[in-house]
Length: 558
Image (cartoon, rainbow, N blue to C red):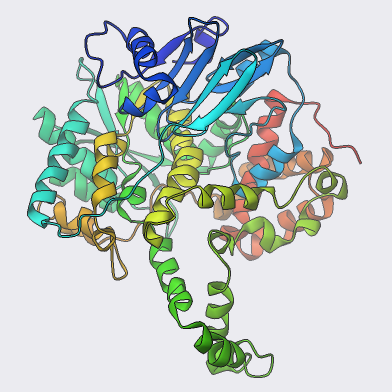
């Protein structure tokens, strides 16, 4: 349900409370749920939902699902809580034109703007698994659910495997459209291949699968998509994105979002969804979530290695390791350099350690951003936001589970899911995420940590439970996804380079980024390391393209 389809502040609901089956529609079910359970009633709702209710006493209640697949933005004005599913729609409705410089900095840091902040001053986005209650002029925003990991002490693999497969199968079945017009993304990775296979299993028909390829060495993974498609007898469709496709789509994709969004996989995802739409499909199933529920990201293994340092007795660390490796004289000895680098990173507390390679920090804040922009923002705010999120997470859980819960917020709710939801909406199709089914989330909470990360083996249980169902080549392939060769293409393709150059110079003219940095990026750095510096070119280009549509006159005071 899109905000522009709604009259101002119209009560609505997507998703139905599980315990309230007699209700005739979602809104009625929510109203009954609130009357029975109060503000915490959203904890009884499964799946992907958003709800906005007018309360009998004149108040307003908002809630979004555990991963904020459905978005709700809100603002208090004239003694009322106003809301919409898009920040830009709400801004126009309320006459808010002022942008928040801090949100712009957050975007440059994260490549998205994490909730509750939005790009518009005074408008907030409800974080995942949160509700907002506005009564008697007072606003309260709080979580209705927080993860609790309850690992099984004596797991039975066979019974867990069977339960897991049953949940997966039902999660896909429940997300099918009644008209048979359901297709799926297929990158050839573990998650998308699982969804494609289950689509075949639940329908008994060839699943319609859609894949994106790139004519660029090291980026194209179409071979794995073909393996999965063949294994499941898919009605497989391929589209190879070109630099010309990027030039055509970038302005539309950037402008479609309700605030700046910098995930470069958005454009490939858009073309994938548009091909499905053009073939008559109305819904796509996406495989997002498997890595974050079951331990599939490389950084989980990497951080486990760094965590070993904290387990070394403090006397040994202080008396032997630190003096040896962190000493200016011995620490630069070639044989000891790797140990020095390891200890320096290991000593950084979580979650800051996961930002050790943050692009904005690596390039240097004062070298990238103008003094006027830096004076208007708190450069530590993004880290403070993440520290607060980490501190409010499951402190008694294992390090791996703490990282999983952290990624549910930043990797999924703030980045990967908006990418897919936004681009499918632009393409004109609905999307759903069977691997984020609430029953599957609950199932993951009881798995032992060793079933997720067995030594340094990623998502061990997920792969072993699907051995024999997924092709062996899929189970052993390295994680890739829809990586976009933007940097190399921006160097070689004149039209794409021109779009990037005039976009970046536009950002510089707004007083956000130093002109000399932009010129060095375009004329020297991008050519030196297209893959690395291309990321910064991308996020600055998408920022400028968004501003041209939504805030063309925006400038930072010198």
